[in-house]
Length: 348
Image (cartoon, rainbow, N blue to C red; front, side, top):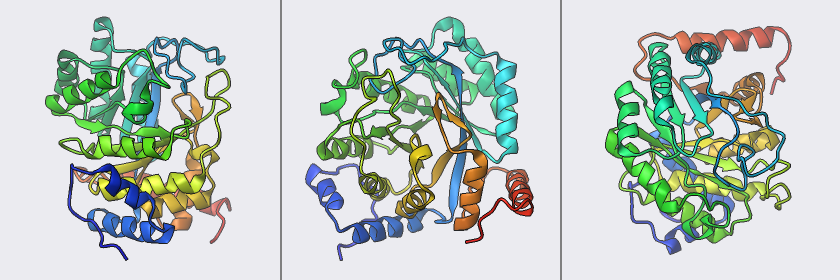
């Protein structure tokens, strides 16, 4: 059995990562679970809610995205939401147990005229006692500083894939543009949320390349979302070949080994995953999910289904260390008890 890797490293070679992917599945899972238990409670999962605060008409041409203005996906365009409407959504998210509220806008980059509203959203969500995250496209130093000053905890900006495969899916911004945004975010003092999408027709080498880019950063992203492509009619990727589910689980496990202290988020694509597959990803080291019926513009398992799965697996929502009371935990336990009383649970 290969020796478990525990050191925090930033110098992974392609050969080393490939060797992890080529381990027998059981050996890889054991190694990932061992690393995971050294840094996290294996029976806790961080829970976030994602809200689209501005939908559609994005000028980028990402071939997977229904929000791109380049494709006809039938998505209705929406302007930037009012601040109070966003805060109402955040309150509801907290009531259902989320500890982090993420806000996404379909922009190439935020306009100067929109920044005051975005800043007020951050401040308002923070006042509710939630962690905050935003994904607004590219950021320069000034806008990153404004968001940091407002108290934004995380900024999401995915690398999506390897540098080699990148221009096959996006041409309106470069890979270096993405790296520059992540640099500006890190320099501002905010935490980084950055990951990628699997199942876009990339090769195994591309998946290795994506994880190497993330793990070889000077500091690992605090949050690493691993998305499985949601194929949307009208996008160039609506008919791409399905990703093998065991290959997806392998990517979760390798990400956990390479970035031991990061939250690895099981993100888009969960709607098509069985409970058994999701349980396997938690065993592989995934310890963050999005709650809610919708993930920006694509389906996501309902909150009640997630609560039921947590109950069956003995998993609890991770609590914010900074919170002095148990409000979040009590909300979850109350919801679980109501559903159990109504007979909605399958008793495993």
